Length: 278
Image (cartoon, rainbow, N blue to C red):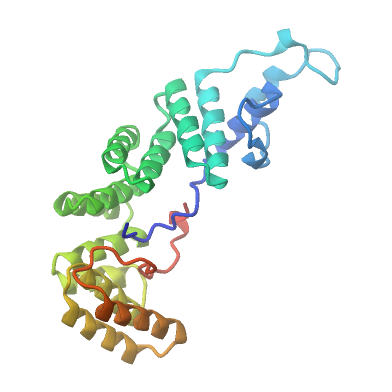
C-alpha cells in the first residue's frame, strides 16, 4: 500500500480530560479485564474520583462506597485498552477494545477514528471508510479526520472525493503539513504538477525534496521520463547524502519497475507537523 505521510507509528493523544477520566476508572475498578494496562501512563485523578474515596479513614474503600461506572467512563477505559494494545502491535485486540468503547458510548469519536485507521491498515478500505464517516458525524470540524478520510479515498482511486476531503482539512487548518503533502501527491498523480509543487512548498519542505515527492507521484502513473527529469533537478539542487540516497533509490526503480502503483520503501518527505503526531 502506498503510504501518504501520516506518521503512522504514533497514536493520537487523548485530551487531558479524557485521560484523567480513564485513570480514575482504572484506579477505582481495582483491576482491568484485559492485559496490558501498564501502558496507560500516569494521570492525576479528576474531581469526580472523590466519589470513590471512603467516608472514614481507611486504606481500602468498601464496595458499597463505590459508584457504578458510567457508560462514558467504561468507554474511556476500553479506549485506553485499545491504545495499549496498539502500542504492542496487537491490532485485533485493539479493534475489539475500540468496538467495545463505541458499544458503551456511541459518541466516542476517537474510538471510531482509531477503528477507521486500523481497518485501513488491514486493507479493508470499505470498512475504514464507514468508520471515518461515523467519526466525522461526531467531529465534523476535525481536520485530522478529513485528511485521513481523504487518504482512504485516495487509496481507493476516488480522487475527486479525496481532493474534497483534503481541501476541507486545509480549510480547517491551513498550516496542516500532512494534508498539504497528501494533497500534493494526489495532484501529481492527476498531472497538475505545478499545483503539486505548490502544495509541497506549503508544507515547508525544500525544492529538492518537493521534486522528489513529485517524481514519486509521477512514477505511480508510469510517467518515467518526467520523473527522471524531476530526479535530475533534485540531485542538482541538493548534494546532501540523504537526498542523493533517495534520488538513487527512485532512479533504480525507474529501471527495474514498470507501470508502478506501489513503491515499497519510499515515504514522501515533509517537515514535522506538531499537531499531526499520531
